[in-house]
Length: 547
Image (cartoon, rainbow, N blue to C red; front, side, top):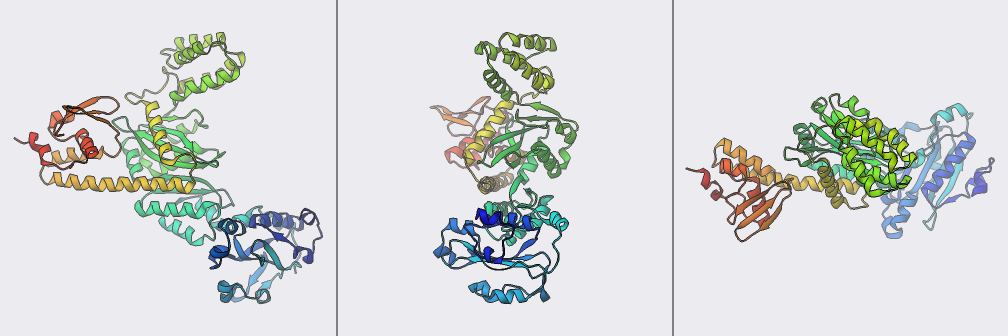
């Protein structure tokens, strides 16, 4: 085949001898062939193999994915179909036996065409008929304007005119259904991803989604997701946002996320961004998309804390005018340590202590003095690296200049969130599976919210409005809070990560200030009852608040 590819004078007879083991194989050859002749051919009609009744019986899934079409027809760009009559006859749709001669008689304009069909053994694509003589001069300028390598391969799943347009806007439920209706094959997992997004919209119609494709290719580049609950979290707690690479989804994609911190210093999801590796401007894309999804946070964000490997940090101030950008300090020490080891150190233990002192410097003088000590333990190359890469942005990670996070343990929030997503997705998920896990999580939370409303409604019928409102708020904490609960001979001990609370064996009283001040059931009582399988609505819980 290589000799045929290099033969500039290939005629129709030689082309008819060509066979291809896959559609990709044909597209690669055809791009080269068209470039040499400056001839523009476009795929006008095709029949996917998975539409054929016999495909499941006679072909393995891998062969169907490789060959893609049982027949395909390519015509010169200057061809027209008379009276909008379809070239593929209805009979061929069912039996694939309409004559090529009938098809060629129905076209007007240039008569050049190439027809492909499955071989008799159904393991190759063969060129069965072609007419390579054009009735017009071939124009190199026109060819250079219209021709794009890989376009034929991309169009085998979805038309690129659709994917290029979709990539510039948020998509809704109807857009996803439109894409699904235009899908010809399951190429590149596109259909699975679209089905997962369709499931997302079926349970959260107001979700915000961007589906970005590589330009002129039906290959997913990025997916941006914000659910209704995420919008609510972002609106309620916009002061500090964390942006970080959560995990490696698979060999081709990484998962990034925006997280905020609620009043209990618990991380709350704000957005997920699934990104093809080597993609640039991820922080800009994610930040702009988040502001478009939740416009009223633009001037309310005071700090955006990002991972050490996140580039383009300067865009934060551009998109969030009142915010400062910080580097997650929990990631600074390991990064400096690894780089120092890579560049050579003399005393590793003393170096770690030195880095800790630099990060926790309480005054500029303290910082400068400690930095001058680097030369005692590090190579000159590392000192230069530190001064170029870290000293210049010291206000982003050194205590004296860094944003005051008050009660927020940033390292714990990021760790817990990353661990949660790692447990949920594992180490090798597809884009579709990643979205589907999110859909499943939303479904569980939606069901939990429904039950919470039912229980809150029952308390509302027997409590004052203020009491019912407080109980409803305490119930809402069951969704995200994770507690360590231990039973003792006298009752239950609950640890929330900061403090420990004691409850009696009947789970009516709790040592927390919320219960003692109101004498109403608190989140700790509800959480322990839920774990033990006991009723959340119990009039005994109101007995102490009644005269």
